[in-house]
Amino acid sequence: MENNNFKPITTDKETFEKTIISNSIKDTKNLGICIGNIIKDGDSILLSGDLGAGKTELVRYIVEGSGNDSFVRSPTFVLINNYSGEKNITHCDFYRIDLGAEVEEIGIEEYYENSTVIIEWPEKIINNLPSDSVIVKILFTENEDQRKIMLYSTGSKSKKLINKIK
Image (tube, rainbow, N blue to C red; front, side, top):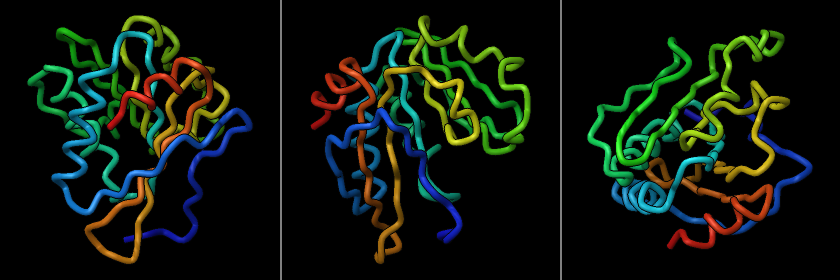
């Protein structure tokens, strides 16, 4: 399923923090539940990975771990889904957005303070991303069921969040 043309997001502010190997959907679920337990309004998570890498699946478990029982579906066609609850989560998928599109018209910035914003395909809106974000790069490995999940911080808040992930 891997697309050799895909390049994960890279920013000049990112600092590598840790690698997590997920050998199964159960491992990915455990990671998502952990992240969901520790997120709070104002956090932002950028999910970068090729088609089929498991980005939406990870979001599903982050939402579950946050205590929200909403059904998570990929917002590929609507761009943004909101999950309100004990912790508010704004889930964005910019796969279908044109690189030259007017990202400002989407209004993503209005969510940055009042919820945890999780963005799939952040490469598409590179100039409109929060300055302090957790970057999650999900990479295929030789094993079909395994994923290499690399975590990067872009500031002190994201570094603290990553340090809480076990």
